[in-house]
Each structure stands twice: as structure tokens, then as C-alpha cells.
Length: 82
Image 1 (cartoon, helix red, strand yellow):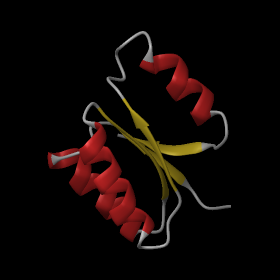
Image 2 (cartoon, rainbow, N blue to C red):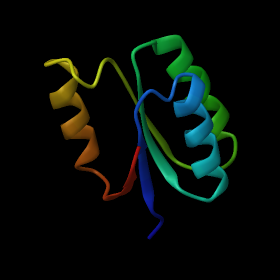
Image 3 (cartoon, one colour):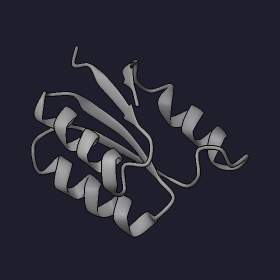
């Protein structure tokens, strides 16, 4: 089974760099970002490398995003959280 990494703030900056690095190491990813367009761009880019990506838009600290994150996250065992 492939390991899965959760990266918050993956839409830009350090989060995007970390997500790209982890994809390069062969991890499948669960990524979050407050900016939907940036999140979609990163997800497409990472999927083109052959890894599986679950993209969850929204602020992880928001009461509405939290349940969506938890429901999606149950589908996979996260090995790395950043």
C-alpha cells in the first residue's frame, strides 16, 4: 500500500513545495488550500506525475471544512501530516 501524505496550505508557497516533493517521493496526497483555483492547479500538476490526489478546498480551521476533510480522509490512511 502506498503511503498517503496530508499537506495543508498546498495551494502555494511552502505547502505547494512540500506537496510536490512528497509526490516525487511516491506518496499519494490529500491536499488542502483556501484558494480553489490554486488547489485545482496543484492537484492537476501532481496527478500528472502519477500519484493519487484528493483535493479539499477551504480553511482547515473552518467549521464547515473540518467535517468535509474528515469524511474524505477516512478513505485513506495518512502516513505523513504537514
